[in-house]
Structure formats: C-alpha cells, structure tokens
Image (cartoon, rainbow, N blue to C red; front, top):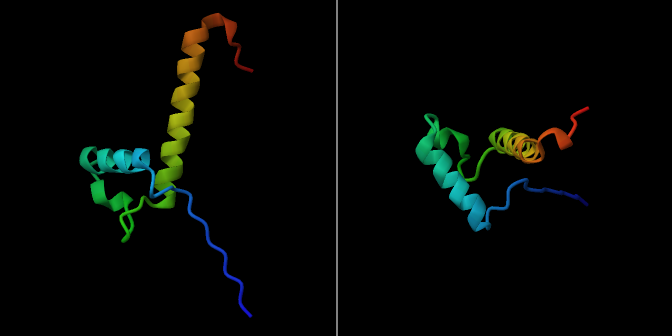
Length: 72
C-alpha cells in the first residue's frame, strides 16, 4: 500500500512553454544546462523566469499608470 503523488510546475505540452524554452536554449550562455534529461526546464530556472516575468509586468503596469499607481 504505497501512495505516490507527483506534480509538475511546467506544462510541457504548452506551445508557449516550448517556444520560451527554445529561445532560452539559443540565447543563454548556459543553454542546455537549464534543461533536465527529459528536455524540460529545471525547477529553479522556471521559478526565476516566473519571478522576473511578474516583476517586469509590474513595472509595465506602473509605467502605464504613472503617478496613479502608488507603491506601498
């Protein structure tokens, strides 16, 4: 009686994800080092990508709303 649960942080079937991974492989000096043996991105680089993406979107929003958006 064993219960094993697994989950994946990256949707490997997503065309958007595949496109980003391909771009990261081609542009990054570490290239394939961000991928594991199954050609999926490792957890740490995936989370870093998400963090930077959210931060960039926040900056875009702040720029678009100018002084209306107050950061506290």
